[in-house]
Image (cartoon, rainbow over all chains, first blue to last red; front, top):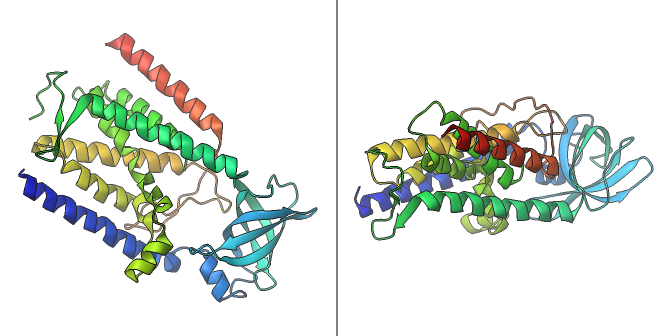
Length: 166
Length: 162
């Protein structure tokens, strides 16, 4: 394949990724069965009496559960919810998923289930650091067996196995 | 999602084991599958340019989350496959990148969700959410330990067998 054709194909496929992201963003709220932060901000009482899944950051723990902030994509706080849940491991600063019934214009949630995604900022830092190592491991392993021909804009196999793959 | 190192190690273990029955799937091709396991997490590009920023820039809805789906994996894998020279290499690379990406989505499909259902990873083919066993959350360190043990075991067996 010529370099020009290769570039053309890459541009086409990357444009395909962009189209996919635009479409996904456009139809997500219609297909996701739970409200987003923005939807909750626009229509606070719209889900009262319904079982919904919300993501939020714990701002305070209480005797009956905790208080969490649900945010919009822009980072603004959409709703502050008081979550009632016995025996939860949620701690202040943690990221949680809460599933339960909303009430009182989306400010109270009686949780059926709580998943603590991150106990705090340290968990997020841990995941980012370990994931960066993962990228290095994958890239290092790959480049051990494949070289980069910048002129032709392609990978070539480093002669090791002698395998004729065409 | 589990941490990316766990995904890469699990892909290494899986593709190495599959290589025991598929003769051409040697270490060189296993590394392509490992790279494939990274593909769904390319959606973390949102750390550099988040959805809201792109939406403001383009003026349309936008969500990097599409990459963390089957459709996203297929299209990104196609772009990756073009970077190889021969048709046979491109087909193999495409299949391995998609398989690696699917291994990532499969492992992510086992983690805990508060409502008991996974993300809609089959987009754009379906918005179905598989019931999840809820075996882990993404910050669980035992997932990485298990992945390390599994990958080391497979590597040892592979060395002994060849």
